[in-house]
Length: 248
Image (cartoon, rainbow, N blue to C red; front, side, top):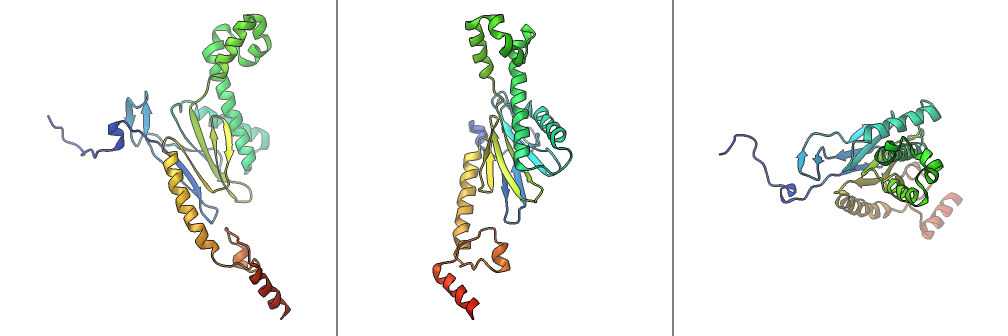
């Protein structure tokens, strides 16, 4: 029996290939473009829904965070903790890249520590600092070592892509993979299961444009050169021409 409704075009997910991706890239004018899917997968793809999740959330007035992963339940508390840490430490102002990365990394690590305590230590009415202090005395050396291995195995399977501007209006794009910040000054990055394909496409397009922009010889002195986002260096022949022009 056929039911009336929108026709479904075949897609890779029908054959068991799921993909999620979040992309952040800055242009030559220090603007940032963000793009992501809106899909949610539950139980390893057993249930999926499109146009359901908004994967870009504001952290502050000038910084946004995108997320991708199999465990997104801790995203709201991590971002809330990071914002409160920024506000408490630095006040209400425009934050630098280092300040934002430290806040998000710290919030992620605290979330992992809290989850580990909930999974393995709550039944003993302990938290991680208490375990590190009294664990050997409470469990014994061998059992404490086993418990520590369990605690260290806890992760939050969610990556973050942080994009924003500092006080000088410089655009920044960096990622956090399992709580570790990665800074790449290439102007773009992607996270999610489709990140490799997205990065391959972005890299090919951007590297294909740079040689054409650098093909023009730049004097390094005019207004255009001072505002150029891809400054090149004049050849020795051009340097000699500049010297002669100044002498005349």
